[in-house]
Each structure stands twice: as structure tokens, then as C-alpha cells.
Image (cartoon, rainbow over all chains, first blue to last red; front, side, top):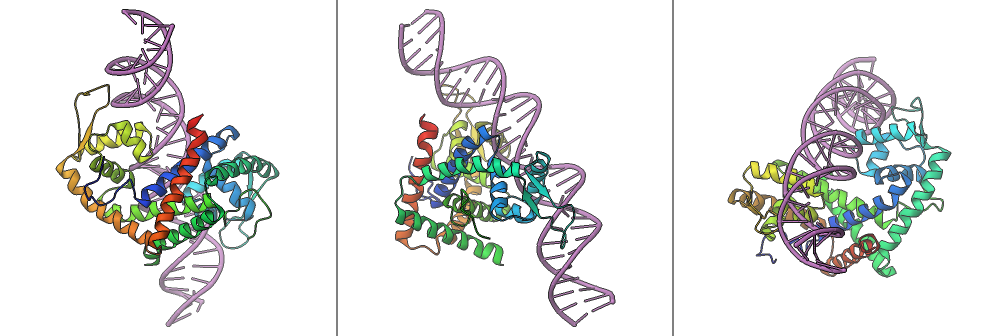
Length: 152
Length: 152
DNA sequence: CAACCTATGTCAGAATACTGACATGGGTCA
DNA sequence: TGACCCATGTCAGTATTCTGACATAGGTTG
């Protein structure tokens, strides 16, 4: 069960813990969203549109951490089901602004409440200063990870 | 760009930050593993086997956060390529212990070094106390998320 | 203006992971 | 002992996501 000085110790690796936490969060979100007929990417897309109306397909993809091709497929199904509407013509460039329909907004409301409850459960064991620390730490990790990768 | 009191504010949501960090980590790992002909699940499987030799397919699946069916497919390819060996018969029950071959161990060594460098970059902006706090915080999140979900 | 460069939307195919289902081994309990 | 229950390995089919490629819109630069 121990490690013999190998490269990465899974028991203590912050990378592994990060993946574990993210996986647990995703599972918990899927669980509460399933009864609402929604999955995590679904929800992420609607939430993004609620907070930043008029986002394009590519912008939504970046916000939901998927490729723009994947988001394109999702947007088509959301549009088919009446949750969002896409402009027929691009007001500028090729980007087609997308917006929530009343139906989409209503569906999001329930999902958002469910997700918020999951997030509250996730944070239930942490004090306010710890939560603030978590925010700073995660932002630092994100910044550092993107330095070389996207910079060069 | 602002939020109007909606359920979850993506700008400050720790859940969103967690997903963002995990996504950035995964992308950075994929980037360094690709030249080695490996992906993240690949690597996770080998690393698990190095630290806990003899794990079964299902145990590996849980450790890598995928289903046992997915891990089964991966193990077959790893076995075909000579990175691991699986016992032909189960010493007890149906679980087939899996072990790294010398080739697998050698391949893992390079991958492990690459992944460690990514993890170091991720932590480069954090002090030792901050890293300790990160560990505690992530463990708390994981524990809280799994409480109701797996408990009931 | 013309040649680039970047970003976007989209199509097609491949890779990856998942859900559902079944049979088997092992333990528990009446 | 026999009836359960749970975990495992595996097969099949489906769903999801990705990579690769192409055309187009707009800005930049000589």
C-alpha cells in the first residue's frame, strides 16, 4: 500500500485530489440533474446563457470546457427542445448570439437550485476563511497551469 | 457581465473554479503525455498499478474514476501492447490481479516525470502552508460530497 | 488594396466512455 | 444446506466527446 519513492504519490498528490474532488462534484451534480432531465454540460450551457446572454457557440464552449464542435451538437438539441434560440444571421462576423427562451429559463431555475444545494453540501465542512483560501488557491493553480501551455 | 442574483454565480462559484482547475490540469497532462503516446486514463492506470500492484480491473476503475467496463477495454489494450499482465485465473473470487511488465514500468517512468513537472507547475505559486490547506480543503469537499450521495 | 492571420460555424469520422444486461464467485443468514 | 445479496468480469449497444478539415467573416499590415 505504500509508495517507494515513485514519481507521484496518489495518496498525497494534489493533482489526484483535484481530480477526485472534481469527479465527486460531477457525480453529485449528475445525480441531482438527472431527475430534471439534464446533464452537467446541459446545465453549464444554460447557466452561462443566463448570466451572459448572447454568447456565441464558441464562447459557450470555452465556458463549459468543451470543444466548440461538442457545444454545437448540444446547442442544436437545446434549440430543438425549445430551451434556447440562436440568431439566424450573424450581426457581426460569424458568431451567432444565443439566448434562453422562457422555457429554458424556467428549466434552469430548478436546475440551478439543485446545483446550488450540491455546492453548499460540498462547502458544508469549510469555514468562510477556508472557502476564501480555496478560491485563491484554485485561481492560482489555474493561472500557473495555463502559463506555459497557452502562453508559448 | 454581471449576475442579477441568479442561483450560481460562475465568477465566484467554487464548483466552477474546481471544474476549471481540473480541466486545466487535465489539458496540461494530456499535452505532456501525448508525445509519449499516452493519455490521462492510460497514465492513471499504470500509476495505480505501480503503487498498488495486483489491483483488479474494478479496483483500477474506481481509482481512475471510470467505469469498470471502460477500464476493461483499456486493460485489454495495455495487455495487448505488453504494458501489463493479468492473471489467467482468479486466486480468489473473480478478480484478476494485474501487474506492470518491465516495459510498462519503463513507460510509466517517463510519464510520471512529465506529470510530476505539470503538478509542480500547478503548485508553483503556492506556499507550503497553502498547499497543506489545499489538501485539507479538497479532502473536506470530497468527504462532504460523498456523504448523502453514497451514504443513503 | 491585397495578403495574411485569427476566430467562427459546420461537417465528417474516430476515439472514448457510458448504460444495460448477463453469468459467476463468495459471503450472509434463515 | 439453500436462498439471498453483493461484487466482479465481460459482452453488446449507445451516447458523448474529440480530432481533422473546410469555408467564411473581420481585422491587421505591408
